[in-house]
Image 1: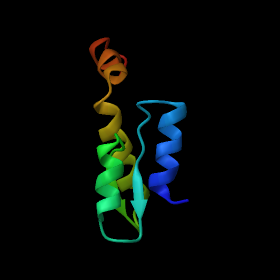
Image 2: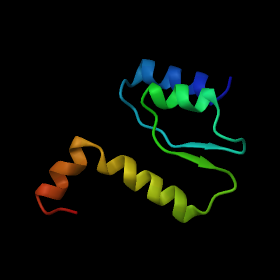
Image 3: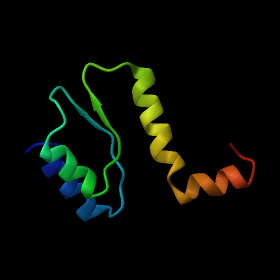
Length: 75
């Protein structure tokens, strides 16, 4: 089972769940496929913790919940 298979199982249980893709390989058709299912940013290993943090922030900023917090001045 790889990341694509895992993400498919995750969205069966929790539709709309986001994910950050981290791989030691170049971006492939499988990465594009999982992004097409709704996963987010792709980051190539090795990566800095800062880069993962920015990827998480980018995905959160796309969410409606984040926008509600932002509009309410809570972020």
